[in-house]
Length: 171
Length: 316
Image: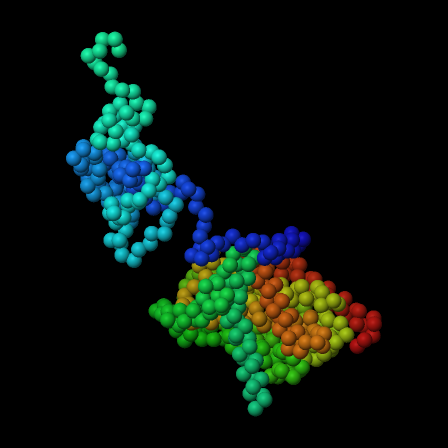
């Protein structure tokens, strides 16, 4: 009997508690920076595409929602000819971001991607590319890579020693 | 002309309150559960009622081919009619009542017994085992609780020396009956919850076991009538508690009597919803045990003590 009255009283006290509901469309929830939402392709500090079209994201993707094709420009710099993500398949697992060797593909805190037409869920490269570096600032893959594609001369990169002169017996 | 006005008022006010409770209960339950409830349609979600009614009218009014059609259609009507008829004897204020019957309490008890037919026939006509189980439970539960619902009012009738609800209120001018008749008040309240089969006693429609009990096969506005009938029942029991134990329209004179009646009724409706928010459903045997082994002896004891006190003080 006492416990019944007590539970009624405790329920009543709940009417003075803070409400758990967040009035969503008017009030947006706080999403942490590492929230796995919409996928973007970022650029390096020089404004060039970071993606080197290595296909690792497409391989890592468990639902096969990423499709791309590699090409290269006259300098030999690899980039994707097309890059397509079908967001009606994407499960936002973030494996593509983990697989990416150049920080090109990133997941950002945005989930409001509803569409009335299913075809609009397919994002092309133009929809995915952003004009910034995303979560990783100051990183340029070709500054640390050994290959020379016009960004820097061989041996001039960060933490890179000049190439060994194989004709020099002293070194 | 004034009489027609009063009848229209007595019909419209409970129906409006019952319709408002569709929204009010959801908002209050949400409040007790730290949510908001329906707050999108109209100001504070008030137009949710309109949206619900529009939706329920557009639903297919389905009568199962295996059902007993005439009885199936009749059943929800009986519930609404018996409850609305009972409102005729409730004195909203001194002069705002349809019928100052000298058997007011008996009229209410008779009508609430007739209300059982609605549920029994609804479950029977559905020709569905879950509906039938629900209505069997409902009939057993309501027969049990009707017994001491009636008996709990005997003390009040003895003290007021009348069956007329208006005279019972008049007899409470000195002090409200819930003080000397506290046991009767608590038992009437419990029986009232069981009568309207609301949550701690909602085993006739126990959705976890019986799909939806007696109204499993109902859809559209016929289901809506059972639904509104439940809220009408809550309003009726609340206004009866106010009339019988809390002095009806009596209250400090700075506000009109009608305000006091509706304020007190609203408080008990609130209590109904609060109890629904906090207590789990009883088991069937617990319900019967509580009824016959605890509440019935208590209410008989209450009659005995009230009678003895009246004879001792010689007020009769």
